Length: 334
Image (cartoon, rainbow, N blue to C red; front, side, top):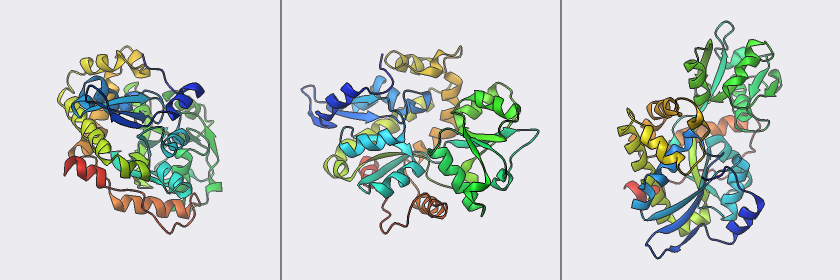
């Protein structure tokens, strides 16, 4: 089975091979893709595209490596060790501010994956409710802390008005809320779904309600984009047809899970329900819109996100703001 993460030796070996090599003898072009973090159900659109043969139908042999955060994704994309990776829209803008050679080419989630979660007895209904209260974030300096600062900026509040504590991204963080150690926390939609499935007394709302921004995007480097637009287009077509297949099979996803777990170690698949409800929830609430819109991204949301990040002091003023290029997507879908 594929292992989460890359060790140093694997990175060195990978650096000696191009992310996109000449077409193999079998007629498949070999490319490398890096997930943001390991192998979780939320990345099914690429894992199943691999094991279900959707990439192969596009003439691709895709090696999927499990990353360890957005910083690693940026590093490997810039170095040319991977064809592309996936990250949050705000993470992409933050990285672009330091490395303008990066470019997003498609949006796989049209809204941010993060939610503000609090107790039903003491709900946090708006960003104004954060004042003077400690909020949990996934990690210091990461996407959830950026989103917290953006929500505060949108509400006209300084970042210092809300203390924060790293609690990770798991349902267990809700215990800190119950104990009164934090007023709420920011975590992914999958965490919200698991808490709701377990009948926990949660109130949850999307960070998009306070700080609209692009959700999860595929990113590459300008150099890779210019050299390998056709491979990127084929990758996007493979993802899109894979999502369509999963949606069609949403009433019976056991074969999809079995296909992926034959190659990848997926944490949610080890649950008694094999992670099927998590995937069904993702298909219902997350993958339908990008499938409908063929992975398109809204320029207006990039502008809104940049403005809020600038106001929050997360990024400096930027003369160029070409965060997103629709060229590969148009090549894929017309």
